[in-house]
Length: 246
Ligand code: NDP
Image (cartoon, rainbow, N blue to C red):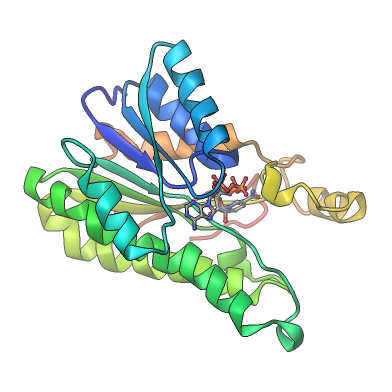
């Protein structure tokens, strides 16, 4: 499943799941664009790891919710983007009754609008080449909901709808568009989960453990491969069996 000759752009590639995706796609031969918004040092460290392993990559900082910045950044990528992984995401949790409008806007802007903006810009080159992969990182929360995460659940459910609609629009150009919906994965985002909550979660996960960023990266690599060219508009659940979605 080589990705040699392909350029991949991973938003939020500096840490967590995005970092694992960068390392995995680079190991399979892709030239990997490591995006970050604030943590340039972490992004450079990912690049150093890739090059030390004999891979290729570059660091590319921008805010996915800033359309001007996204346009400039993606235009600067020589040869365009073949594989786009919309992974950048944030949480601003709180019960609905107390949730501030700015917390709703921040999460929707980064997690959903960001994917729209990046996909719109990256797909131009894919359409010309008549080949492309767009992989959106949704979440189990977008499928089952969660108290205290109305903004996050709405954005992640929205990504699944966005995926199906773009998949239909781009299918004639041989561009596939899919979602990966992780369950609970050990990253900075889930670092604050209490031991008590973790115990409850583990009881609800048939495979009996939280996931790793590498588990998610393997699913992304599968969907990015040439061999997956007949799969589009789908959501691949990577959650240890916690939710068996369709
Ligand atoms: P982390 O918090 O570990 O990393 C988030 C990444 O997103 C960082 O690289 C960060 O960059 C980047 N980022 C945040 N905002 C922006 C922005 N506006 N523009 C560009 N980059 C941005 O998150 P995870 O690795 O845990 O999560 C990655 C994705 O997976 C998210 O979409 C998340 O919702 C989803 N997910 C995670 C799960 C989990 O259990 N961890 C479960 C299900 C889904 P910087 O380093 O510069 O801050």
